[in-house]
Length: 310
Image (cartoon, rainbow, N blue to C red):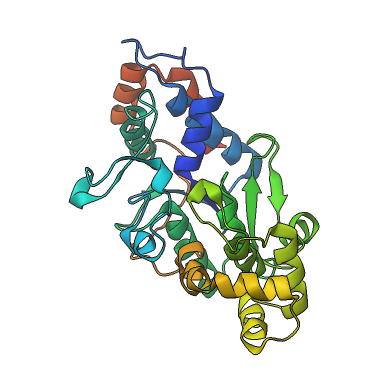
């Protein structure tokens, strides 16, 4: 029973920037992100024929528990501090995109495509939790469609988990498996990629990394010592590192004590049981018809329905 997990926000942001905002509803509102995402789903279902699809949602794009550990986490993307539900920060989202997001949620519901998030967790954590459930149940394969490299840490050939990364677009994604991780990043597994990401950092997420330890150096250290834990044990023992590496890892000790928890996706987010079985027709055709007419989505919805019918 193959499963396709969609990093939904990653995909609708990509659609928003990749599809002209001249696409408008009958009332003149932009619908480029909505139509772009629906067209993406139609293509993925047609191309990959998954048995199940889950649209994973950001209920909290900047969880407080991550910010408590590293205050700079995604800080540069905060538009209005504390203005969201429960005092959460509001993410900076283009004005023309914000009104399209609830429409996307409504259209997915009308189609019958499962959509799931978890309070206090990002879509990455939802994906990590669903992958963990699949692995524990011995189900395979699982594909993750995302533009976020953080999810490379879930790649696991033995468990049948791979990432579809749209470096050249969703129609020609990089298929990221362990061989691709070794080729591109010099690490043998998804777990090693997470360790690499901790050491290297990620400015787009406000993660500083260890100053002076770039991607190639991090990969070399992991090749020598096996894991981040092995590297830190060598640091603490004063063995096997150059003086510069010893100094940099020592100076980065405070960051390294908390960064793994921030970087690693959760495997235990509080999610309901999710079936995700791909519908063969719209779950709520009348509601879908109203949404289609209201927002001018006829061609995109028709493509999704044709893909579902298979």
